Each structure stands twice: as structure tokens, then as C-alpha cells.
Amino acid sequence: MKPPQSGADPVEAAVEAARQARRWPKGLYVHLPYCPYRCPYCDFNAYVLRSREQAGGVVDAILREAEGWARLSGAREGGFRTLYLGGGTPTLLTPAQIRRLLGGLRRLLPLDALDEVTVEANPGTLTPARLEALVEGGVRRVSLGAQSMDPLELRRLGRWQSPAQVERSVRLCRAHGIANISVDVMFALPGQHLASLMRTLDALLALEPQHVSAYCLTLEPGTPFFEQWSEGRLRLPGERLQAAMYRRVVERLRRGGWRRYEVSNFARPGYESAHNLLYWRHEEYLGLGPGAHSFWEGVRFATVRDPGDYARAAVAWAHGPGATVAFAERLTVRQRMEERLMLALRLEEGLDRRRFAADFGLSPEQAFGGAVWDELEAAGLLERKGDRIRLTDRGMMVADAIVATITATVPRPTTAAAIPAPAR
Image (cartoon, rainbow, N blue to C red; front, side, top):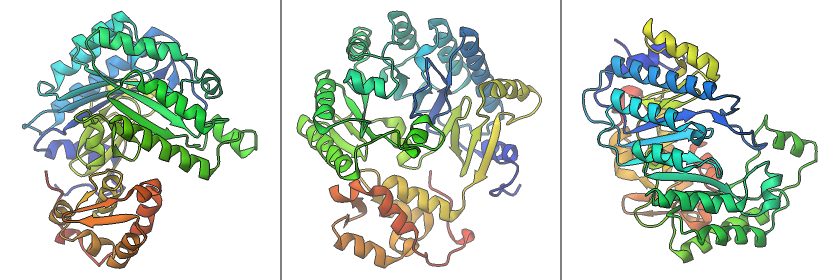
């Protein structure tokens, strides 16, 4: 059967990818969409939880979807290496719901060889009972949404937590045997100054996390923050201050022993996020839950976003495969090249020229035009050493702009038939 092309029926594209699969993807992402409240800057597929029954219904639907892919998939080799529970706030599930979800996934899918199991959590939602259920299910890594340790900044962000809850959450995790802890910190917040950012960072580093994610606040269309900013009611630090904040964060973390391995992510040696590295290295993953995305057998697809519609679609798996799929496309050669470039240049390790040439039959310079690489290298934004192309510290500051500049060039004419499929 000819592989579905971009724009083909979404169910057909995703189903055919699963049927043709020779092995399972390396990563499994599970989206739990409910939160205790809605943050004014957030554009994730998240909803305020109204009842335990809502959350339980999504858990049941996720397990139905997992069962559907397990029945359908032609994969007979390997198993998942990472499992990531994201959201939303997965730690709003009750202990019984956590046990049902993790136990069900292990029963339905090949999860015996997992190297990393992560759960996202908001401070204040981690309790001893929930942590016991998570640990029983194999969770050994927690990603904690701290964002700030300044009470005023937290209120401006619409966050209900307190700095004390962040500290208590870290202590609880360690008391239950979870030593691998990541914390999120945001900068360029409304009213934030460099001094307050560094106080937050120092307070979080005093908790000795193994991993830190540092994100610049981004205004997303459709969010209350974007509307307030558009109307002149929200003032944010200017670009020069934002850049200074990022530089200071990088310097402070490096000095303390946290290595930047991706533009916004820092880790103690050996504690990089294995799951997120799959995304950045353009590896395959399967996403379950409302609005979850997948990349499998060259097809990118996503599920129904609304939790109620998703739950009804999951029931329909009994009558036809792929019922939860809302969108799918088979990536073109050009799309695969651009995604590989965009993701790899976010990493300190950079772009592997040999892998790129093996997968696409062209070097990066041939694919995107040689002159632009020379110009970026001469400007001190990029360096080429051996088989690696990576951004410099200056380049990391403007990574998105550099990728846009490179991909705007006209590549050498190629055809899909002349280029091998991505290597496994």
C-alpha cells in the first residue's frame, strides 16, 4: 500500500504508520489535561478540573487508546525506553487513578525496559499517598513547576502556590525515594528585575535539583497575558534585559555545576532528560491522551483535543482503528530536513553531519546552501568541528533566528526517491 501523503485522511495516515512499524517508538508521552486553575500565560491543552470523575474518565480513555494501538501496531521489536506523564497537572489524579493508569499501561504496552519515567507536578499537589502510587508505578523523576520563588511574581503569574510548597514538594519526593528532581524557572516576568530572578534561582539551586529548565516568558495568542499586552496593560522586561537575564542564568548554573545541554535546559552530569532528548534528536515517540502528538514511521499525528470528545473517540476504537486521531501528515523530505536542523541546533552537541548525510543523502551545506553557513561562522554564531555543527554561546541567544535564516535558503534540487528513509 502506498504511504499516505500530507493532507491524506488523518486516520488512514496514522493507522498505516502503525501497521507498517517494525518496532515501537522509543518514547511514550501521556497527556493528562486537567489543572487546579488556568494560568494566564498558558496555551497548553489544559482545563480546570471540576470533579474526580472527569479525571477518571480521561484515564479510562487513555487506556482504551493504548489498547487500540497495541492491537493495531505491526511493531514486533523493542519497547519504550522513556515514559513521560505531562499536562496539565498529572498529580491531580487520585492515588487509585495513578495506580490504574500506570498499571494499565504496563499491562498493555511493552514498558519493561524503561530507562526513565517522569511525572510533571505543580507544588502543592504532591502528597505522600500520591507519591507512593507514583513510585509503585515506576516513577523516579519529577519535573516540578516552580517558576518563581518570589510571592509577588507568583501572584502576577496567576500561580496559587507558595515558595514553601516548592521546598516541601522537593523534601517529599526525596523522602519517597525520588532523587531525580527537575525544577522549572521562568524569567522576563511582569515586573521582574535581574536581582529578583537571581534570588529565585539561588533559592531553587539551594534545593539541589539534578535538572533545571529556564524558560523566557512567551506571549501566546489567545491567552489573557497576550490580550493584556496587546492592550498595553501588561509591561514586560525589554529585549536587552531579557538577554541579560538569560546570560546570568547560564553563568550561574554553569558555575554551580549544571551543564547546559539544550538552549533552556541544564543538568548535572548524567541527569539530562532522556525523554526530551528524543524530541530534540528527532527520534520517534507515541502520544496518548487528549491533544497528544506522535511521530512514528515518518508520520506526525495528534489526537482529539477536547477531553470529552477524546473519551468518546477512545470508545470508538472498538469499531474502527485510529478513532482518536484528529490530524496526521507524512512529513516531506524538506520538512524532515528542517525539523532535524531546528531541533539539533538547540542542543549543545549540535547537528551530526554524518547522520544527516546518511539519512538524507546530502550534507547540511548542500541541503541548505553553503554561503549562509560561512556567514554565520564568520559572525561567531556557529562553529563546525569535525562531524558536528553547533551554535556558539552568542548563537544560542538567537537560535530561532539562526534556524530561520538557514532554512530560508534555497536547497539543491532533490527528489524524495533519491533520499533514503530516516535511519532507525
